[in-house]
Every structure is written in structure tokens, then in C-alpha cells.
Length: 113
Image (tube, rainbow, N blue to C red; front, top):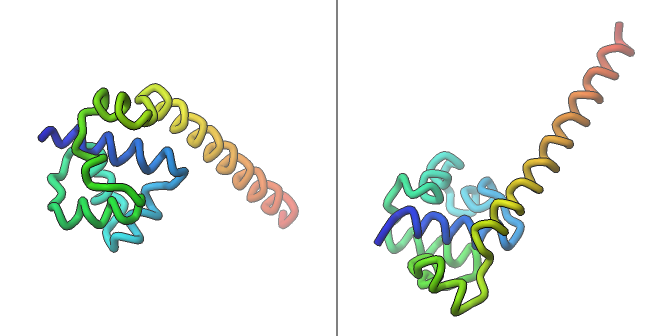
């Protein structure tokens, strides 16, 4: 089984549920870096770890093992283009928050000077 497929399926499932990597990593008791490596197909997760991730995401391990095209045809899963769109929207939202926070810091610093 291709680790990239497993990782992509995990990421698609997580994103479709509106969860971030940090929340899943915390629930698993691992670092965000370790969890990220699973999603990127850089780490070969054990069956136990896949089961833990599946429970966090409320799906079956099977959902992680099925080829994306077969999964989409059978379950109507989110396509990779939709995932990219979701990720981009979340990134834009995050960056807006970062800018707002920096503007608040600048404003506070100006008041103190």
C-alpha cells in the first residue's frame, strides 16, 4: 500500500471535518510534526496508529486504504481539488488572523511609546 495514498486519505478526511493537524496530534499524544509526516506519507503508521486516527476522525481504517478514485466513486468523498480549495480557504483565514494580531501588537506598541 502506498503511504502517500493513506496520508492523503487521512488529510482529506480531517479537512472535510474541519479539524486541524494540531487537534488530531494532541488527541493522539504525538507531535504535530509526527502527525504531519503521516499525512505526507513520510511515516509508515502502525495498524494501531491508523485505528487511533480513524477513531479521532470517526471513520473506518478502510477509508484510509482505498484508492482515492475508488473511494470517491463509492462514498462521494471530497476530491483532491476540493481539499486544496478547503486548505487554501483555511490558510487565507489563518493569515488574516495573523495580520489582525500583528496590527493589534503594533497599535499597542504605538500607545506605549
